[in-house]
Image (cartoon, rainbow, N blue to C red; front, side, top):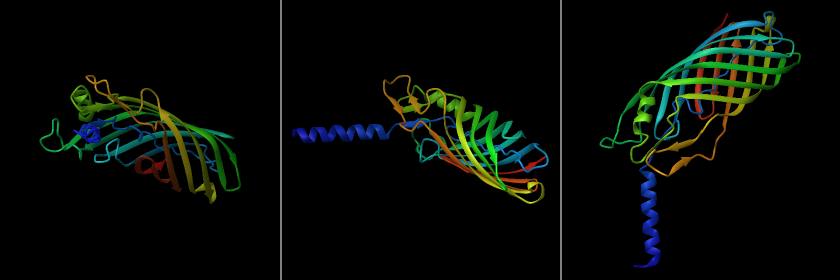
Length: 254
């Protein structure tokens, strides 16, 4: 047999093998960051509590699959002369929709429930302008714990042929931010701003293993970048955020 044909057939076989592999990440992988609102320097009250709720759409690691979820956030924030700090808790309930596994494939499913709960912490150093706060440098940190059918599924298939998983259910993500917030009107009743986050998740992130295989899937992209838009009219809040995911939330300030 021609040597070139042998190598061609080996390449096709390797490609077919790789295409049959199934890779699964934690439900909140690269989508656990969520913007925390804070009072601006022009606000009369420098302390506020916020409740927000909304929806998230995420493709996760498989482009054929997607996740949809609802999220509830409760946070409190304080603003001082040149720094601010916000902290809070959140909960997520959602569904992982399969589009890759076909009927008849091992472990085929249509949808699997997932949930998560966790804590958030955020802070900034800012300088004041006439109608703007430049939050020059800040940080965002989030801890989350996942539960539900999708988490159990990843643990079930982690040693099955052609399945490569990240079975973690606890994630801790940390990164830096920069933000600009414009404000106008009495007591800064109208606000809008933009924030950029860049960071990563601690631990063996973007690594997917099978306990019975020496092969390991590893993504070259270990970072997370998100962009958020924030708007507040009087006490009503709107937040849109995206990166590897898209999130839309509405809320209220107390």
